Image 1 (spheres, rainbow, N blue to C red):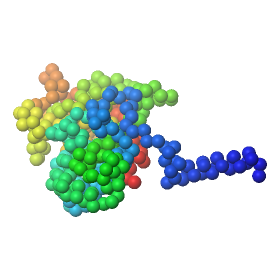
Image 2: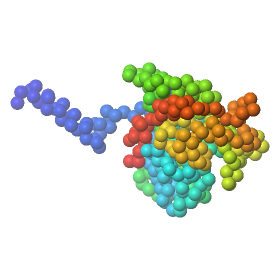
Image 3: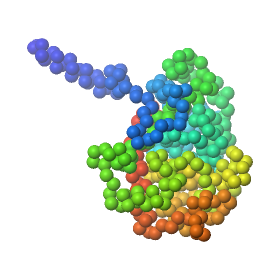
Image 4: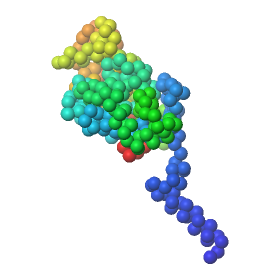
Length: 348
């Protein structure tokens, strides 16, 4: 056979091998890039220098995120209440459903863009991503387990001792390593490829429709004081005028015991709203239309109501029907289909 034909066949063979799902050649081609800050995002607040995201660390964190042994009876994973197709929320449930089908008291918040968060959970109380998993693991209504038991179960599995060695250099399974691995997975849950992001980055072919642009203008006028770009939250805790719930959830007050923090909850991001219903800390609104009508006509003068919702003797934010349509059109540009379909973040 002619030498040229051999060369063609050789490279064709390499191409076929590289296309096989589990082939090491493909693994080398698909290099793990680690944590990448989107061009239109600010610098993260998480101290990545203390826990740089590596391929081995991320893969360990992903395995732990989907590991049922984190729960008391080995049935509930982090992914049970934080489902990727729902932008890592528990879509359709007003409050989270945990072990033994126990009901929590709050809606499961999305896991996305946590590298830019200074505080976690609806009611605060946790200010370090590396510590956040302790709460769901130990909460009676969620996983109902303790860290000592979790680590004992993890140490008993050769799969994990090998993964810990790959991520941290030795097989030792410690609380700190366990937490850092989970953080590495959660840090990689970055949602930054919505239509809005592509327009802001001036990517080719990306532009708002007339209604979306009008909605963006209205959003900046009426909503951006709390839901600031590009994360669409300012990370603060505020009372947005919801009626006090039957269980009298006092929100941020439980963490601070400061009277003026009663009924304040963390301002959520408005990204991926198409996938994350129902809305608010207790999931009381099933639709965006319900949320917008709350701000238009249903805000209540509960203790510590945010001053932005009580202006000139009037409660709420006036929105007519046309404005609601246009704001909704803009909010839909914040949905990131690439994020909810990113196979790297899925259970393997």
